[in-house]
Amino acid sequence: MSVSEGNAPGAWSPDGLRFACTRCGACCIGAGAVRVSDDARRLRRGEVSLRETRAKACVFYESERGCVVYAARPRQCRTWPFWRAVVHSPERWREEAQNCPGMNRGPLHAAEAIESMAAADGSSGRLPEKRS
Ligand code: SF4
Image 1 (cartoon, rainbow, N blue to C red):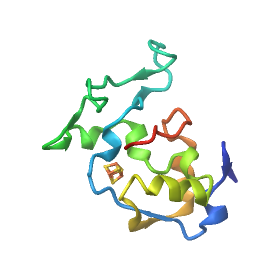
Image 2 (cartoon, rainbow, N blue to C red; image 1 turned 90 degrees about the vertical axis):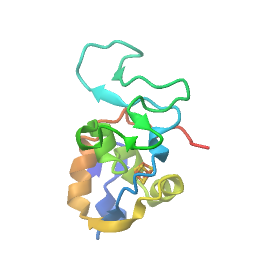
Image 3 (cartoon, protein in one colour; image 1 turned 30 degrees about the vertical axis):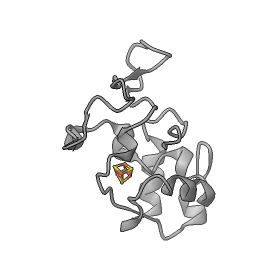
């Protein structure tokens, strides 16, 4: 089996991958659209996405509280870091883990479950822009 951009995680990490979000907010800040619908009428650059603040943070991110819609966050946020663009190779996984402290810690997610999430990750298929 394979995700659209390469190998399924089972091919290079058959035991699965560890992840537990620390709610650090690093992924809520910085350029990169949060898509909220795959099939809604296309409004902007072919996608419907959440507004960003002037500082390029997600409009639902507050510095004191973090994500204020965490329980109902968009699919793209719920499936991170198990995006097809991230899990298709160990190199890509390691690279993204440098920006996300939740990766490689916490509970083990089975390769099959990761494959399902990656297949419907809600992302554009592109990686987030680099955060500084
Ligand atoms: S960067 Fe990773 S650990 Fe931090 S909030 Fe985002 S998903 Fe969670």
